[in-house]
Length: 463
Image 1 (cartoon, rainbow, N blue to C red):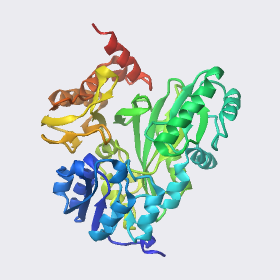
Image 2: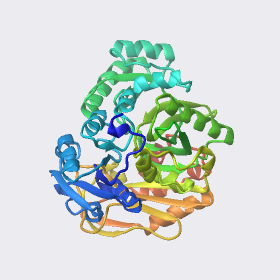
Image 3: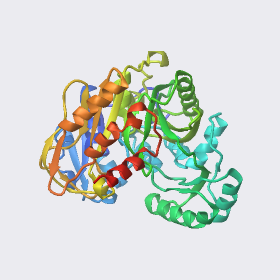
Image 4: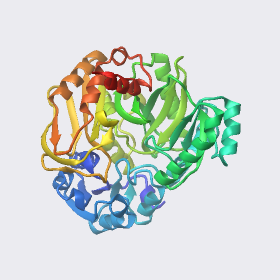
């Protein structure tokens, strides 16, 4: 066996190949596990809290991600110079880059995540559909290989019926997707989606599937170790989305009954087991109006919304990632996973809801995060931090827990009312979350992926 696949290989130093709140999250987990942490940073993040709290820090380039956080030679060089044993990629950037994971292995660095082979298999979402179909998971009608062109897309759409959705095979993060409702639209939609996919992912390959009207987005958190143990940690409801971008997540989902919850959890474990998955991952499903669920994709990394699962299960997912990477078995079994109460996460983004969520930038002048019982805030902010145009708009994640869903909604509204986040030219999405939480359909739990669009229309129509 190579060193990175030995049954147990202790980690002493972790290089955190990311920025912002997730870099800080990993640094804190390392500290609690007694591990040394090294943070890489661009010149735009030279005064970050993660850099201040880590044991060491290395500048890897200018603000542009391609010259810093996506620069594999610079990241690997920082790991080797600082004596790191492992690299934690967080989410985004290089977290699902199989080439990066392979280079880590070549340099005798433990990549905290699945193997390069597993990542490669899951990178093409059309191929993943075929793998999951073979594992017995339900799929919406569509293709299990990439389309050869607009003509094939038109033929398949006629076979499976409109509406359909075109998706980037190399996609992620809600980008490279377009709904087509009639035949006359498909050629132009194919061309536009292909162009978007090529620009976003460097790969214009597309696949197609039936579009499910009135659906909800349900995802299941899984953990697997190299000893063959795989468990799920319940589900998250991610149906509050704008243009396929998640805004709010909660656990458990108010849309599932006990039988469906057990079935979707078992399906997630079966799918992960079929590819020999190791590490933290997420199986994503669509839920139809009749309670049927359909596999959508698998994310081979930690999710932005992992805190809601941590809170309801009482399990530190980042700590488990680091234990798994060292070859240790999971510290618990499926019967030990108990979901208690209800958790909600709101993503506070540097976006202006009044201007169709246009991105905003500027220097933070005042920042007071909410606090109080069962309120958690994951953020890298402090007064003086400059929100730049180079990176994701996420500024903070406000997470609350309560004994039941109504109490969690009320607690989140209270927390958002307490939040103070101001800056020159800076506007955030916090007020939009309050609007969502106050809507009768959200409070009742009877909503779908169209909720945000409805809320936007309501805000626009107000005098």
